[in-house]
Amino acid sequence: MSTVLITGCSSGFGLESAKRFHEAGWEVIATMRTPQQDLLPPSLRLLALDVTDAASVERAVEAAGPIDVLVNNAGCGAVAPVELTAPETARALFETNVLGTLAMVRAVAPHMRRRRAGVIVNVSSTVTVKTLPLIGVYSASKAAVNAFTASLALEMQPFGVRAHLVLPGRAPQTRFGDNAMPHLRGMDDPDYSPQLQGFVQSVLEDQGPVTHATDVAQAVWRAATDPAAPLRIAAGADAELWMAEAGLA
Image (cartoon, rainbow, N blue to C red):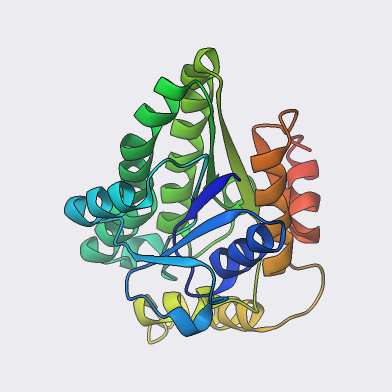
């Protein structure tokens, strides 16, 4: 039986990915900063994990045992014009989205390299291929993940280890908007307020082509199980459209 460890399983993409692998008969190790077993099927293993805490990463990886697939899904967002993004918000985004993902890779990749087998799947975003206003620092953090994952894929290929990026589009049904809104800045600025009001509304509305959490779960599954999967995998109807427009489909 293959084993997958997935970060950020309390909701959305991580939760659906955990269910997808569980339904396929895998051993699933779901992780959350604050474990809530009632959110998951009872047979799933649940570990506490804060990807920004080195000791927490070490404990979780040691407790997990051999990992065949690592899915780095944990992340955070923020909505604000670049000039109004607080330094502490920018640091928090990069600490979780970039350094947290890198910490998990550093903890797991050596074991995969020694076994000459394994898959690392990093969940990024199609905002890295379609420029949008008001999430510039978030987009920059995900672009950093794209860059080091592309290098990681080349570095690990000789050892039989694959690395992939899953790029979701807009997902109004998930808690991304709720998690990003506390960092919202500029609504009281007469210059930025109209842009922000429109952006917030677009995040909350489930209209037009969007990405569903199940789309991301299926893309993660493809990355994990298909040796012919590309480096970048779009997840969601809007993501597929944006990737095609960028010439990456």
